[in-house]
Amino acid sequence: MDFFDAISASSSGLSAQRLRMNLISGNLANVNTTRTREGGPYRRKEAIFAARPLEESFKKILADRHRKQLSTVQVDRVIEDSNPPVMKYDPGHPDADEKGYVAMPNINVMEEMVNMISATRGYEANVTALKAAKEMATTALEIGK
Image (cartoon, rainbow, N blue to C red; front, side, top):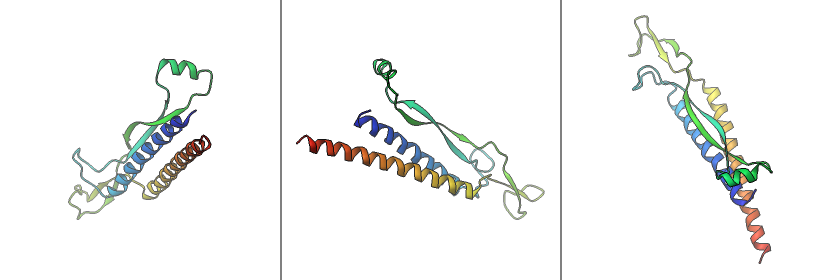
């Protein structure tokens, strides 16, 4: 693994965690959204991550079979929660049905906050790894003077 591999792995992690934080922020912002363009309440969104080999050329893939291959992370897809909405009794709400119930997004604020903390920690870990790789490269350049 060289300096650029470390930067590539950390930067892919930064991008993935940033997208995850954006999705979580959107979930929290829409916790009370009962009407969307698609119809019905807002549906919680979540990122699905997948490992992707860092080396893409065939020659490098063959060479890496003899040593452990480094992987980066990528967002495979963004999914919408398939759980049914939470029905809340609020007969005065403009989106209430004939029985007075409103379909609310199935978003647990505490769960989203835990996910946000996890994404933040993942982001911070990647920043730390990126800084360490930069410091090692700088030190190596200073040794060569």
